[in-house]
Amino acid sequence: MTAPHAGRGTPPDDDFGHLVSRRPALVEQPGGPDELAALIVGSAALGRTVVARGEGHSTFGQAQSSGGVLADLRSLAGVPEVGADRVTVLAGTRWSALLEATLAAGLTPPVLPNYLELSVGGTLVAGGFGGTAHRYGPLTDSVLELDVVTGDGQVHTCHRGDELFAATLGGLGLSGVITRVVLRLVPAPERVRRHLVAVPDAATLIAAQRDLIGSTQWPYVEGMVQARAEGSGFLLDVAAFYDAATPPDDAKALGELGFDPADATTTDLTYSEFLHRMAAGEATFRASGDWFHPHPGLNLLLPDEVAAEFVAEVAAELTPDHIGPSGVVLLYPVKTTDAPLPRMPRGATAFFFALLRTAPPDPVAAEALVTANEKLYHRARSLGAVQYPVGSVPMRPADWIVHFGQAWPLVESAKQHYDPGNVLGSGQGVFTGEEAE
View 1 (cartoon, one colour):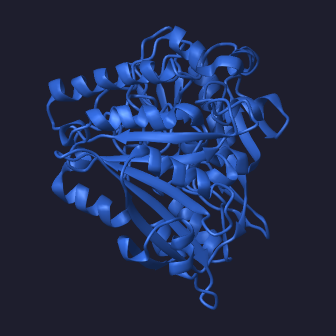
View 2: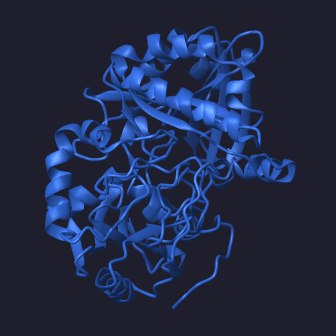
View 3: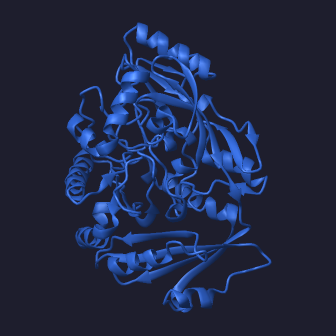
């Protein structure tokens, strides 16, 4: 069925970045895996590529189609089953809707993205990170089973150890489109005690975060870099999960980190309130108009051994104009995955460093920030860093081969096996030879 744009997602020729505009020839909302398979086969017969799209929250045309077919997967939404330790969810479901179902059963995925209005499938083809990833790894490591419709029009159920499973999670939708996911669940805490603590520099922030890895006291560990006119500031962002009968001892816990509780900004929230902590900020940014301005973001995964020096160098150059009035700079540790994808630096721990910029509605200013992203990406890549590929960085085919690194043979083999006609397109231009810009 042909579907008009609806809901809170962006129009089909736009995305959250508002930097790239590609107009599809057709937008379809498949009603299930079989309809999606038929759409892929029919599009291939007409010589059209198919690009799958969830909420359109990428920033550089990654889920746009130029003259092809856009498969709007928001039609594949729902939570068919919540079990004792797992949940079955359709790929077009938002994380916020998934949580409504799991929290009612006292359960939660072990890792969640900070922003809950992303689609499940769209997150998983990139990877997915959040404040508990230092303990559990990327969100893809919590996936137990997938249904995938491949570029040859076949519907597959796959599991860890299968080539298609490995190539799909973190594989950018190049070989198949996720339609159904089974995710691991853990017991959800009742409450969250969150602390924001100012620290003097990047080295202190990263050293504190390293100390917290593996701690049972602090399941949530993040941090922020504040771009200020007088010089960057640094915030440690940690939270303890607890049940009402056993509240944490703040003075003891913060004292063990070497911080005075009086220096911390502390909030106490229900677990649900904590998970939805970005909702108020989103409402403010929508009301101000900043939400609809360009967002030329850059997301990097830095090797542990270079993170402190690299972040310090970048922070020294940051000004409020580089980030924008509603921009945020995140920095936190993540456990690397044993899976080939999503791509991550070598070592047990990496640092997720995200410059989530907001540019003024001026194409020249936005393009300058994209150019800055490209330079910063190549600088980081020379140090062993990897891009988390939802941001705004021009990528050529040769760049993608470098990006995928040791996983490139898997990506290429899966593409040849499951999408031999190269029907599944991508605004990222990995196999089309088109530069993503």
